[in-house]
Image (cartoon, rainbow, N blue to C red):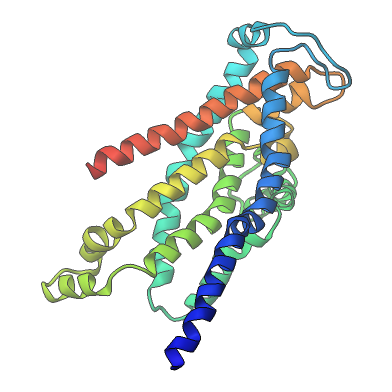
Length: 305
């Protein structure tokens, strides 16, 4: 009798639930789609349209076809910024990936004082990048902390031009990027290490493998996917590098630290400049980011196969 009483209620509830089920996903996804459409896709479409015009930053423009891209292809300043940015990426990304993975393995071990080390490692994450850039600007300038310490120890006879030399300025910016970028990369790698199977490590230990051998042959292969992800995210972040050169050197000396985004800013965001030409630079940067992600995916796919 009890079953007979419940069956009609269930039968009546199911059609009502099915009738209202269609809008439930829209309630959750709708706000995100609105935000993405407003702040991501609309500017992207607008940038695409502007790249075919001669619009300025303070007024409209006319359709000029592929003129902006033709000018971009012969712009020596743009290609110098591209080469400088890719050099920046080739020098910093391997260091960040290697250093963050090593630090994550070190922090993941049960060493005394690891909690203090974690706090020190992750402290750059809570600091705004502009604040970090200003801080290192004071530390690395001619009368900054580093030169004062080296001079006090009689290591140098005169201040080193960390930010005013065309040879040292880019290297100084790279060190800041590595210091800042290692925090998030270490956190991602550490999260991956928490899911590494302890059984495989224990089996290797029983077979007589040492810590270094177990780390190289057991631990690192299990977090390979995360390591690739860290490399992709870091590469994309470095391709869009802007704050460090803008705040610390302003692109100088002599344009030696001018990156793609900083060049884009100078061409299209400053008052009186060309928004159409800057939009063409933005699309070129978008292609570079896609190419970097595609190359990484192809290399990773080849290794998995």
